[in-house]
Length: 105
Image 1 (cartoon, rainbow, N blue to C red):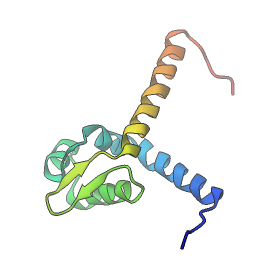
Image 2 (cartoon, rainbow, N blue to C red; image 1 turned 120 degrees about the horizontal axis):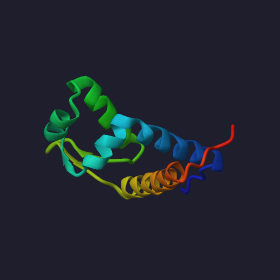
Image 3 (cartoon, rainbow, N blue to C red; image 1 turned 30 degrees about the vertical axis):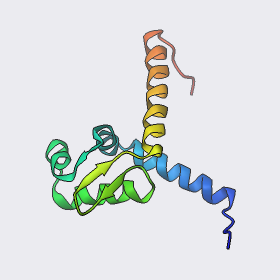
């Protein structure tokens, strides 16, 4: 049976992925991949429960793959594309800041 997914559902999932990935700590987690949970937890400096909450929430939307038995954290295709998107935006912002461009509000 083929399940039809609405455009609205896909849009909502996309925005959830962006929202979770754009959190500063979550972005740092994604930039550290691939790694293990124990190594990453030490580098990020979070206690166990907040750390695993973040890992689980990132894995739920496909921003990382968590192999629970080994504690391995891996990038996914979405991880790669998300980081590339942020880097493109970062370069554009840097150019605008360096050129003195100000956004109108």
